[in-house]
Length: 404
Ligand SMILES: *Cc1c(COP(=O)(O)O)cnc(C)c1O
Image (tube, helix red, strand yellow):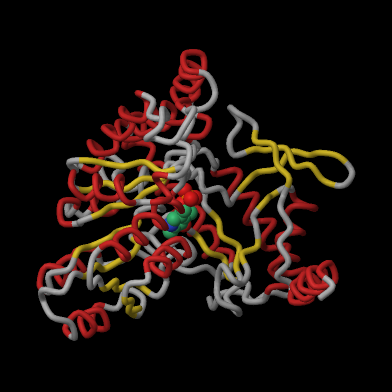
C-alpha cells in the first residue's frame, strides 16, 4: 500500500461528498462573548459565534477567571500526576464535593472530559459486572456507544425515546439479571428531551440501573442548574448522572455523580480514570466557581430560555425551517451537505455570522443542518440581524422555506 496515497484518496472522497471538515480558526475575546476574532486567508475579522456549547458564556465569567488565576498563582500549571500518584490536588476534592452537592448524591468522580467519563464508566460497568446487560438509546452519543462496546457486555439498542420498545427489551430478561438503561436528557443535535420519569418507572419495574447523560442540560435546567432531572424533581431516582464542565459550565472536564460505593467502584477499576493525569488545579478551581455561580443564578437560565424563544419566533416569522423542540438548541434544517456548507460559508464570509455546518456522520445524511445555540449574551439586535442574513442566504441558494 502507498500510505500517503491512501490517506489522500480517502480525504478526496470526503471532499467530493461535501463532508470534509474545515475548522474555523477563532480567537475568543474575553469580555465580549459571543464575539470572536476569525483568522482567515487574508487577515482577521470580528464575527458573532452562534454555535458554541459554552451555552451561558461561563467561559468568560469574572468569578471563574478570578478563581483560575488564584489557583494558578497558588498551585502552578499542572496537577503533577494521576489521581493515585501525587495528582490529587485539594481543588479536585472540593470540586467533587461541589458536584455531589449539585446533584444531591453521596459522591461524584471527575474525569478529564465528558467523553472520558462516559467511555470509562460504561466500559467499566460493562466489563466488571458479571452478566451485565446494557440497554442503550439508539441516539446515544459516540462516547457512550464506544464505552459500551469496549465493555463487551451484552447490549441491546432501543428506539429513540421509545418506552414501548424499551419495555419490550426489559421484559425479555430475568428480573435478577444486572442491567442498566443508558440514555441522555437533552439530545444535542435534535434538541429533544427524554421521558426521564417514565424511563425510571420502567427501571424500577424491571430492576434496572439508570445512566443519564445530562451533558447538554447541566447548568441550564433546574432551579440550581443540575439538569432536566432536577427540573422534573426526580434526581434521586437515577443511579448515575453523567455531566460535563465544558458546556453549560464553560470550561473542560467530565464527571459522574451517584452513590459512594458506585463512584468508589469506578474510581478503583476505571482505566480511563486511573491511567491519565488529572485536570490542572486551576481548571478544577474554575469549574467549582462556575458551578457555584450557575447554581446561585437562576436568572441566567431564564434569560437563556427567553433568547432561544426569541430566535425561534423570528425564524418562524421569516419562514426559515427549524426543528421545534422543547430545549435551547435550534437546528435549522438544510438537508444537503454541500448547500449546508455553502450557507455556513456565506454567513461567515459575507455577513460575519459564524455557525458551523453539521453534516454526516454527526447527523444522518439528508438531515444536514445549521445548529444555533443563542446564549444569554446574544442580544435581540444580533438575532434580528442574523435572521435578516439567513433570509438572504436562503434566497441566494434557493433553499427550502418552512410551510407557512
Ligand atoms: C459533548 C458530549 C459529551 C462529551 O463531553 P466533553 O466534555 O465535551 O468530552 C458527552 N455526551 C454528549 C451527549 C455530548 O454531546
